Image (cartoon, rainbow, N blue to C red; front, side, top):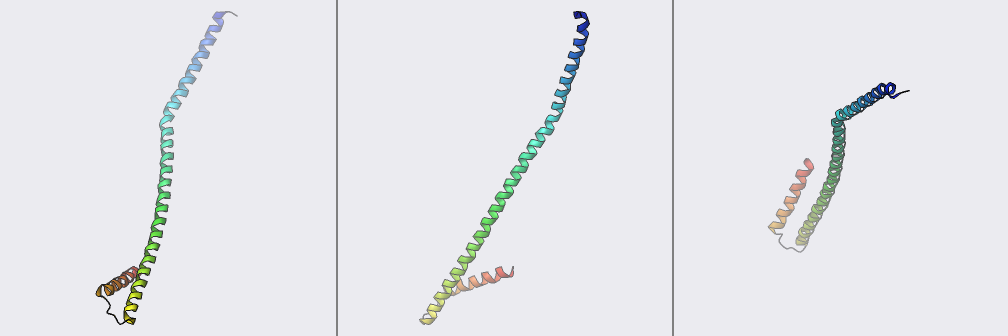
Length: 115
């Protein structure tokens, strides 16, 4: 075995390896945009999921606030009714602002229950 007989085999092997390396690099280069898009889509899906969760939590907070508002309105109405009843039992005149507040609250309830 001399060097002249091994040289063509070595050149063929190196050429084949170079072609394989270039093919691998080409495939990686062509797949890069797809991999980048997959990463971006995954990140966007995660963000959408977080936004939905935050909206859900925000809606729960609004529901709680609506319940608190309803309780406060009922409490104010009870206080107004108590004051009107007190004025009636003591034979004192009921102020116009108290009557107006009572009527406004009753109107508010009538509008909200019809919706």
